[in-house]
Image (cartoon, rainbow, N blue to C red; front, top):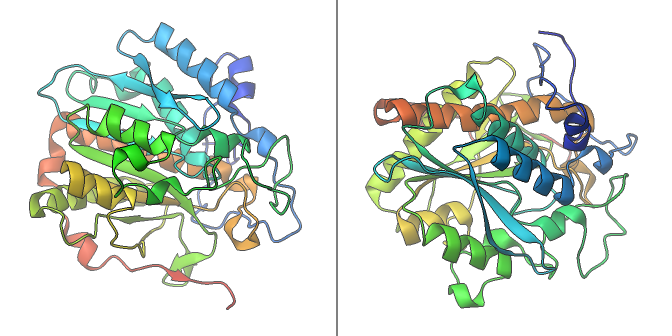
Length: 349
């Protein structure tokens, strides 16, 4: 493969008639450049809400197996889209969720590439044996910087800022223990129109973390964690650990990924815990390295790292649906969790 990184936006790829191939350097592991206060981080390279909407409509028209559903609206009235591939009610069903936090966008870029793959032969044969739900941008207001509070301290350049919070300055990933009537519109749509409506077996909640977490003296490309709330059913927990096994082995085998164990809370208000407790869904949190924008410099990653992080997202989603389709998830070895190092902060205190 050519040793270069991709940092073009979806709009650029659409203008060329499709996605360019995402190619990786052989030694990318976690070592893409930080922001460091001396690099321009261009949000204009990221897919806008409008571009995402157009892409999904084009793919729905092209792909016979894909249906596009609007599950609700954001605070500012933007439609929240979900791509659906529902082949048979007896098949296992997986939900991929991105951008609860609006400044964590490379997982969205990867989810869009994954959707495109589902319309080609790159994942041949999986759609008849697994049901797939993809919400590629839950927090569209935060992703577009269309919020009711100031973002003047945010770091990135480009045509917009991106923020963790929704337009009301609420963290959507802390909404999941509330009654749905009390939730923010985005979280309410997720619960009422997806988690309560579909019989979901597995969910991967895709996020980004800071740039300076590592294991064994090396920066990680990402980290994972199963639900840690004590009220999670043991079978649901075991399914979650199996899900993590599939993803870990897929990414680890590529040579450009280094995965640690995430340090996460136990509260039911957190997505992976809330979905596991309330709906008996086996869940996995995957935190990619670095954020697209923030006011805190150690959280922002230079865009030269975009390529392998997008690729890591595609690999995460693809390996999951393949394991669900062929049933290999049932025999996944979860013992790696016992020795997976918990990541540590490697920056200066």
